[in-house]
Image (cartoon, rainbow, N blue to C red; front, top):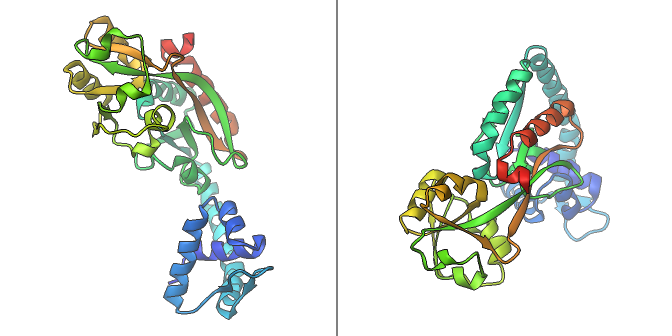
Length: 300
């Protein structure tokens, strides 16, 4: 009935004095923490604290859980530390995630080179955590994240890698193919081929079409190569890093256009927690990533 997350939430409430501040401490949204607390109160069939009081006042059930948290959480942390020390004595694992699907093409050679240089480390590339990777990082579910979004700066270090230009890819037969760049209005009726990522997380919609009402169609496709092949067949348009399209451009199979007159550029980062025992290894991996970047990124 009572889980560790509930004990952490109760302790954070005591330490901060409000739900909003406790949510920030736990790296959660205020609505998520409120839902978590209400769910616990529903299970217990009683309230935990007086809402809208300053300072926050705990009810008897909340006080009992506070006492439990003070007993249980230190013991759990001690056990976790002992387990980690046992793992460190043999081989350390770095849990890794990429929020940018298109980055896998140049990331894997860098990982191979890194592991050759660091025989005492293992890299576990996670594909199950994609859209809330920074939050997972702070919940100790991940150690490293490749991302283009900086958030929760008070807890996360972002190592800048390179600027990535996103380009609009179209078929040579497409009406837009003769242009060097496009305006947002020209994409509002298009069929957009994209990775299966929520629309609100896609840079095209977040930064280029944010002020416009998109009325076209979004067609999800798992693989970037399949996406480009469908673009070549004039089945839609796609927005991808320019370097991914180079082999197809050289063969005349597709055309590449800038998104806006200045282009749409996104910075790429390698992110890790501010205080992390393996930071020197992370720095070495970041250096390798920069050395093995796509040629277009290096020349930008």
